[in-house]
Image 1: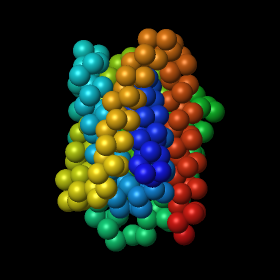
Image 2: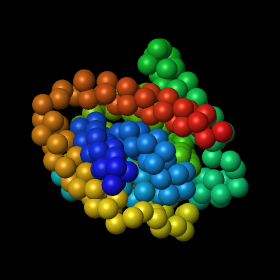
Image 3: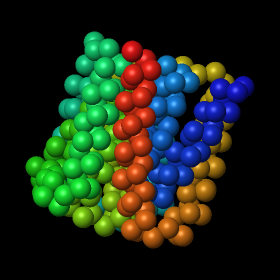
Length: 240
């Protein structure tokens, strides 16, 4: 029961963060899900819940979706999901998580520290971000940071970014589940609290979304991405 409550709280925080900032569910929830459920089932639950959260939020913000940029990100992400699923089955998860987390941190620090580091621009930048997001989503359940780097690099308006990201994350969540051919294994109380956490988190996020400025929301995206990267590294070290 304690585990089920913990799962519900993690999902609530992640879902509310995603509604406010456009990403955050996997960044907040993935490390804790893996610690509670293990690397395989934890990432599967993240993929499933992330897809559901993104779809629900998408119904509220679809008018602000940039379909062209969504297609530029999703197109190259799908092959990366397939490749990542294959690698995840053969490579040890802990070292992979450490390398991925460190690379995310380096990319985010570079983007924040220098205008000249904002290299993910135009179509090539979208392709690179899509590949990174798809690969990270299926391997460690954290596809948001790559998209966040792209958003900051091009100065993407927060409102359009937050909406478009939902379409991207929904597509990647479904693709990740299909690529791994697995169904999350979790006891009934866990599913109940996760469902309740999703609904409560979206309601809370709706309440906060109109009270948080775009500037603060974008800053929160960066902080969440960095926090998620650090937690991913810590998770990998713990599991070594």
